[in-house]
Image (cartoon, rainbow, N blue to C red; front, side, top):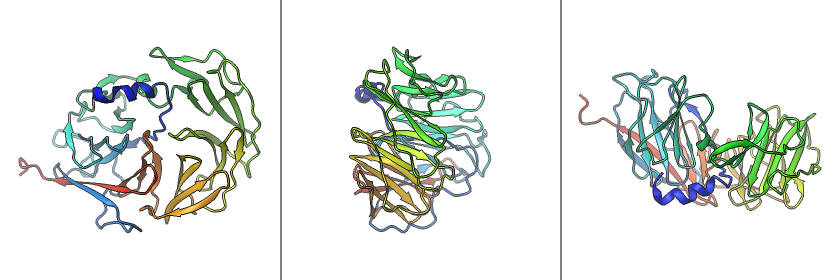
Length: 364
């Protein structure tokens, strides 16, 4: 990460960064190509950023991930469905202008099998089975290495200052460069999800198909157990889901992942949200700020607004199984089997990033 962006990143060590960082096994062939053979059908015009990269035709399509609207990375990690080899080393590319231009960066383990890429905030992270993690704090110019299966502590800290440590089933806080258990744990048998910002800590779990909540307003020194309305139907998991604009939601996950979740929005109390309609089958949902949820379905997407739960269709260029995530700067990212789309803070403007392989001049 460049020095000019060091201050915002340090701030993220103490503020929640709502970054959905999907990990994909780029070393395995995908049943669906990343790039389409024909332009997608969209309701409105979409800005297309199409760039040719000096990559031999033998490489499979890459896995592309963004950390914010500007910073993204592309990993080429297989040829003809086969893992990297001496004649097909893995390649890494980076963009700092939203995919308008890309440049190659050094890959720390170009022959590693099964490698996976994620981007946390704007930090690229590679996982190599049996060898651990490689991550860069200077925009990919160099990589640090940590062994083990657990994400490196400094990278974890970019996501949230308070987290659930699944190994011990307790809440831990990032403080002084170290993860430490909270002195007073919430009155929950085993928290599933947590959100922490400044003095506020919200921890949630599920008991007998119902949500159980613990809230602290003094960084975990004291806890309250607010009552949460029983959802319509059983839930099997729960997420505390903040938006980058400050509002907080509870999302109760169903046993059937295609069934619409139970929702609660915090406005001084945890109020259940009864939604009048939504895309069916439901694909994905993320907090979008200001009491709104962005939702995607097979025929597009739209917004659900609290407190009334009204759904409004939006002319977003989503189709099929586009899955929404929210980057830490409020940008919507929609990932489908054939493309990646970036939407601005209001979903009014969308960009489709396309990387094409161009045979290098040295190829014969």
